Length: 292
Image (tube, rainbow, N blue to C red; front, side, top):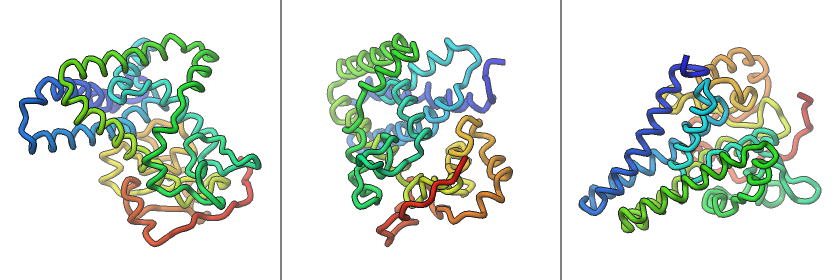
């Protein structure tokens, strides 16, 4: 079989390839579109960018689609071009997040999870959602990724992905500087802002020290159908290497443990988590650590 886990990963592959072709077409035709069309197409591009970061590349990181390693390397390059960030960099950052699970600051005032909502917060509270979303991309540091790639003997793949990001950016700039400046750059920045917004509400209000309550889940059928069960985020943190199609099964297997703790279950999908938390200004205080 071509696919390692599920034939349904072909849908994610299709989204990734379609996004890359859509960006190329948009760059070539950008100057011919009227303003109203540009706004619509730019919004579509923004949605695809956010969807890739939240669903496509995220699931690829945990469960690479193909049995053949060279195909996974090619898919990683495609995702790098789509996000203008090396997918290998994304993987290292995200696995760090799963290792330390949105931890609070230690005695030195630092978090081990680089993307923790507590990293820049005050008084043991999460950072404000606006500064978290608007500044997280600017705080990103590629140097640690270079060190990890050297240690994991993935340096060549990292440089290939970096080169792919650079070459594709120059190509889009040469095709249409107007597209590059007025569409690609804003989508790149705000697309990552939206991805960080989703991550924020996947953990806001949760208790990092509690194994069954360190993330927030949303069980709405429409969101989970469209976004490959991304709503099952607590379940995902409990079994991060289980394929996305099986996350509802994790909930059933651990239902007793999950229902025995006070945890965050969002009424709205994660990107709209602020609607669930409106009026709330504080996150839970530090809890005793549960042994795993």
